[in-house]
Amino acid sequence: MTASTPPAPVLVLFRDDFRLSDNPALHAACASGQPVLCAFVQDDACMPQGVIGWWLGQAAAALADALSQQGGVLLTPHGETLPVVLDLAKAAGVSDVFWNRRYDPVGKERDTALKAALTERGVTVHSLSARLLHEPWTVRTGAGQPYRIFTAWWRAARELGEPGRPLPAPQEIRFAPVPRGFKKDLAPGALLTPALPDDATQAAQYWPCSEEQARTILEDFLDDTLAHYDTDRDRPDREGTSGLSPYLRAGLISARQIWQAARQAEARSGDHLNTEKFLSELGWRDFGWMQLFYEPDIPTRNLRSEFDQMPWENDAEAFTAWTEGRTGYPLVDAGMRELRATGTMHNRVRMVVASFLTKHLLTDWRKGERWFYERLVDADPALNAMNWQWCAGTGIDASPWFRIFNPVGQSEKFDPSGAYIRTWVPELAGLPDKLIHTPWKVDAALSRSLRFVPGKTYPHPIVDLKQARAIALERYRTLKKDDQTQN
Ligand SMILES: Cc1cc2nc3c(=O)[nH]c(=O)nc-3n(C[C@H](O)[C@H](O)[C@H](O)COP(=O)(O)OP(=O)(O)OC[C@H]3O[C@@H](n4cnc5c(N)ncnc54)[C@H](O)[C@@H]3O)c2cc1C
Image 1 (tube, rainbow, N blue to C red):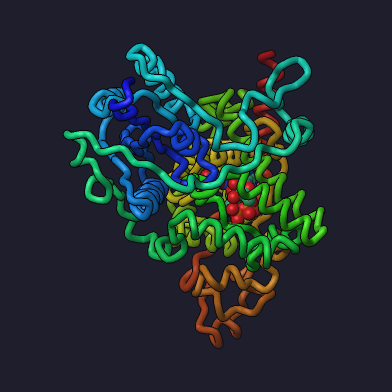
Image 2 (image 1 turned 60 degrees about the vertical axis):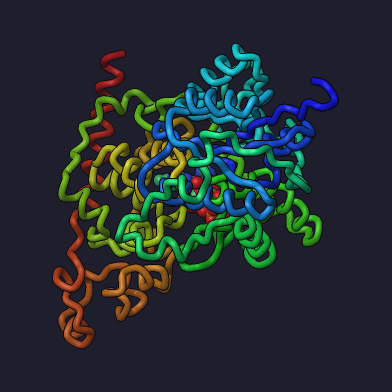
C-alpha cells in the first residue's frame, strides 16, 4: 500500500447478533482502522420461518436503522452465504472479514466452508466469541468429555471465573462505500421481513424491537423484578421474569451484558440469592448450546435411545386441540392461547403444556417442539430442543418420565386466583377462583347464573388425567422392560 492508496475495506457479517454494543466482530473491524462494510446475508438455509422469522427480520431492520443513524448502511444481499460473500468481498476489495461464531450445525458448516474459501483467496477471517458466556467446548469434565449434568457443568463453568466484560459500541464507524452491483442490496428495500401469522394478534405490540429496547427491559427488570425472582419466576400471574429471551435470541443484547448489569445491581442491593438464581438461568442457556454443539441432531433424536421404541399415540385431533387451546384444562389452554397470540408463554406453563402433550396425550415431543418453533418469538434451536427433551424425559439431565405434571395441581399452585387463566381464556373469566382450575365441576345452579355451560361454553377435558397417567406409566414400564431384555 502506498501513501496515496486508500486502505482496503473490511467486512462485518451480522447473523444473529443484531447489535452495535458488545459486538466483538464489529468492534474488531472498527479497531482495524480500515473502512467498514456491514452485511446481513439473507440465506434461506439459515432463515427460519414462522414468528421467529418475523422477529429476526425486525431485528435486522432495527440494526439497519441503528447503522443509518451512524451515517452508514446495512447491506442485505439474498442468496447462499458462500457465493454472496465471495462476490461482495471481491467487488469491494475486502482484506478481512469479521463475524461472531455460530454453533448450530448449518451455521457451523456454512462458516467453515466460507472461511476456507476466503482464506484461499487471500482474505483474512476473524471469527469471534459473542453469543454465550463461555465457548461450548471450554467447559469439560476432567476426562475431557462434555458434561451431562447441569449442576456439575455449572460448577465447572463458574470455576472458569466471571465471563468476559462486554465491549462498548464503537464510538464511530468509518463506513466503506458500497460497491457497484450491491446498491440494490441496501436495507430496508432489500430486507425481507416475513409477516406474522394472522392469529399472532398481539405479538407486534408485545415485542418492540431494538437494541435500546432490550437495554430498557433489562434495566426495568433489575430495578423492579430481580428482588423477587426466586419466588416469582414460577408465577405466570405475576411479572416475575426478565422477558429478555427474544432479545437474546436475536442478539439485540448479549448474555455478557446481562451478566455484568446483574452483577452491578447485586453490588448495589447485596441481593446474592436472586442474582445467582437469575444468572444460573443464563447458565442453562449456555448448557443448551453446549448440547447442540455436541449433539447437532438434538432437535430430532431422543438422547435416551430407549425412547426410540416408545409407542406414541400421536392422535391428530388431540394435537389440534392442544395447539388451539381447547383441551379443557384451563392452564394448558391459557398457555397455548398466549403462545398463539403473543409468540411467548411463561416458562412454568411451557413445562406444563409439554408434559401434558407428551405424557397425558402420548404425543411425540418432536411434534410439540416443531409447533413451538413455529410460534415462539424466542424460538431457539438449542433451548427449545433441550427443554422439550427435558420435559419428555428423553434428554440428558431431564425430568424423568414418571414425573408427570398434573395441570390442575400446577394451576392451583402457580396461578391460585386464576388471574393468568382469566387473561387468556375469557370464557372462564367469571368463574370463582376455586372453580377456575376445574370448570367441569360447576354445578347446575352456578352454571345458570353464570351462563357458563361446561362442554359448551368451554370444552370438557379431552382426557381423564388419572387414566392417562396410568397409561403413560404403563407404556414406560413396558419400554424399560423391553430395553432391558434387548440388552
Ligand atoms: C418446552 C420448553 C420450550 C422452550 N423453548 C425455548 C426457546 O425456544 N427459546 C428460549 O429462549 N427458551 C425456551 N425455553 C426456556 C424458557 O421457557 C424461556 O427461556 C423463558 O421462558 C424466557 O423468559 P425470560 O426471558 O423472562 O426468562 P428469565 O427467567 O428472565 O431467564 C433469563 C434468561 O435465561 C435463559 N433461560 C431461562 N430459562 C431457561 C431454560 N429453561 N432453558 C434455557 N435457558 C433458559 C433465557 O435465555 C432467558 O431469557 C423453553 C422452555 C420449555 C419448558
